[in-house]
View (cartoon, one colour):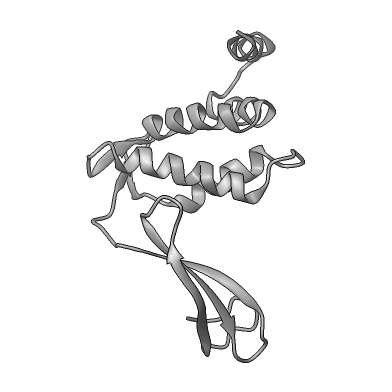
Length: 149
């Protein structure tokens, strides 16, 4: 495993334990060259999940896209990276539990909308404004009214 700080490939495992949801192994590692510590997760590789986009093209599911969307939505909000990662884990579990090899991006979007609502109300509105492509203030206000109910 390469060190994300210095790039050296001499690292060792300090601690190894199951993740909170028992779907992966969490490993704490330390670089022998620079001494910095970092965490890796080991998961069972399964058949790739294909995402069917709005334009009907297909691409391989990418967890990082969901994570980046949540990070952007939570920018300057009091939401820790641990909460964001937990939310992404929950979203990913829900997507994979659908039991299909292909899933439409709209379904993933709705799962994200459902999970982010519990994370932070402002982040929800930010995400919704991009995901739902609000055209004017009235559609934006309609979404806000849904949250306030």
